[in-house]
Length: 157
Image 1 (cartoon, one colour):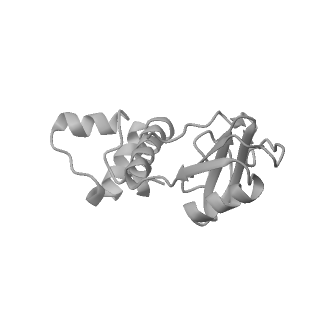
Image 2 (cartoon, rainbow, N blue to C red):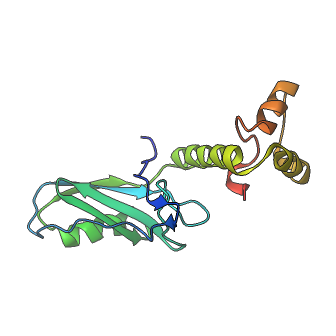
């Protein structure tokens, strides 16, 4: 299951602080899905809304339902939603390690492409040489030109 890409939550004036949810009747008896959302190291979700640091961020969605909240794990997240909507059928799962790595790599590629100039990329590669293993000259040039980030995605500042 791919990482949830949330709608854009920023403008030229900056990021929104969190997101608004929709609260419905507590007697809602439909299906609700709970999913863990990715936050980058700066506390931003995939659409650019700022949440800050803290516990894992979760989203509960269903017909007429959209809630954002923090919980320590999937069990606590499911219990929270079941407490809000006791008649609903609630299911969910946490983000897998593969999904997390995939999103970190996508975020690193985008940051590398849009926030570093070629000379800044070369300086970063020199400073963090142990992160990079280039197999060919074309591989190194692709990275320097910003086509992809070939270092440790979780460490890109």
